[in-house]
Image 1 (spheres, rainbow, N blue to C red):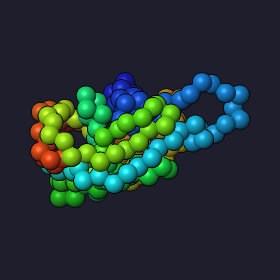
Image 2: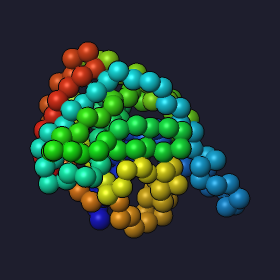
Image 3: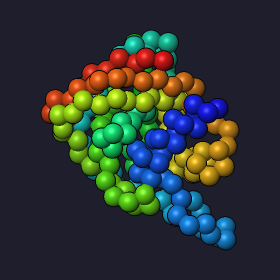
Length: 166
């Protein structure tokens, strides 16, 4: 439970564009009305290996130190993990800018060495409301089924490879 909250706390607060909430309201404003995400195209990519036991599931990743977020795809309505097949997954990599309430996923083409936190998902797409459930209510979720890391991942021109470690 602590690992799940810690993982998604990092992803959501830092990487997922501050899906953290603005000041409390009287309940009349829906969570998605307070969360704004702009997603631009990216050339950044991360190939992750070592996922053999998770074939058919989906993966997300984030690198807090560089404000990088990795997924199969993202829209203003939610995040889709990258499908794991034959022990591999290829994720798009975005850099995150903006405020906690209004963030932008932008093109990543950097040359950095970073550490990643991974989340393995039981379903492909997580909506903004599902992120809010984790953040506000610390509600039970059945879609986060495993977590892992990769240390010292080196990007060249926005591309890198990593090995998942549980």
